[in-house]
Amino acid sequence: MLQGINHNGKEVALSNEDFKAFQVDAFDERKKQVTFRINGVKYLCKILSYDKVKELYTIKINGHKTIIKKTSPLQNIIDKIGINPLNDANVNDLKSPMPGLILQINGNAGDVVKKDQPLIILEAMKMENVLTSPIDGVIKEINVQPQQTVEKNSLLIVFES
Image 1 (cartoon, helix red, strand yellow):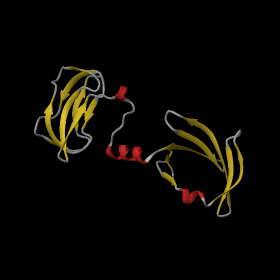
Image 2 (spheres, helix red, strand yellow; image 1 turned 135 degrees about the vertical axis):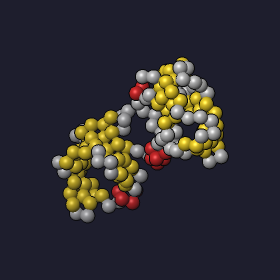
Image 3 (tube, rainbow, N blue to C red; image 1 turned 180 degrees about the horizontal axis):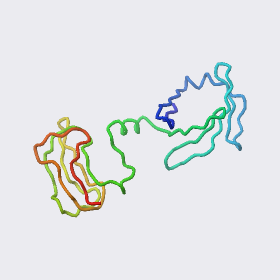
Image 4 (cartoon, rainbow, N blue to C red; image 1 turned 90 degrees about the vertical axis):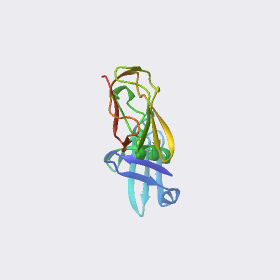
């Protein structure tokens, strides 16, 4: 299975069954290109670049350039629940990753906190979830209190920037 998202946000998924419809005419590893047919229609596909860190392919198919981000079933689940570990350096708040009940707050405005320091205990689906600081910083304000119900993406803590 090959999964990805193109530059327009459209999901791309090709199963092993889908690949059986491909008839490869030519493959040039040096040029990073393949010529293939699907139902008699010819396609020339060339990989222009690949970013290993971001898992982004820039490809050209029949003269049309597109970018595809390689994904996995696990990454799709992580994206759906809203967890994004990227860009921690630009984070200046802590939001609720899911709806739930605030059980405990470990800190006050003005406190210096370290990355991954436990700050809030959130009960969701009868489980206690420890929400930690995404950065080293100072708490500017706390927008919730114990026993408060919150929705997904509710702003819980703001850090000084």
